[in-house]
Figure 1 (tube, rainbow, N blue to C red):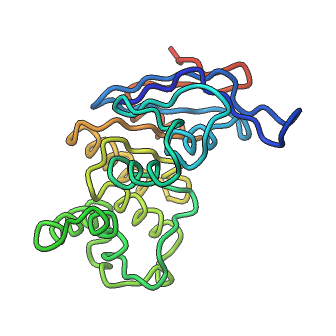
Figure 2: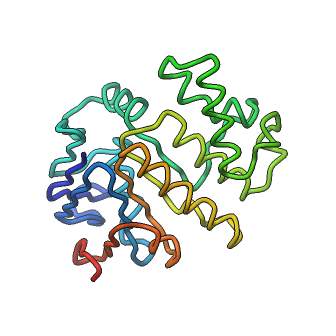
Length: 222
């Protein structure tokens, strides 16, 4: 599903700060992995590169055989919209849309509407504990509730690759456990590949494998 081959990234031009240096990772369909590490080592940068939100200085990012690093911005956007689901730390909910319509947005962008789409939205809202808030606007929700909406939205169109950047960071222990279970269940059910960036030991433990990212590279925890 995903092959990251010797990816490097620096910021600040010539002589700038090297964030990632020759990072490699492979994730197969149905596999859910976690990336942990200290703040500032490049975990979110790696996710942004995999999502095609940024491009590496060198290396390959192969999603289902297509090197995202060689695509232009429009093509990367299309791949991201159709094949990926991304849970951002900052939520990025549209403030003028109801919770249900926010979750439905990936479905609408991919041409899915009607009863099946409505049922999918309802299923996910109930799964994340917000089945009774479908008509609410984002401003009427707490930060933790908005995070749960963001998770539901990322999963709505059954993406082939799920990327989650600290999806339980704003949640209390009970709701964090719900989100851990929802992410894992949906990834396994849809035979997707999942990558979780987290500081939470409990969240990392819900995945199949845990990698640690440091200045020296990405290593598998045993």
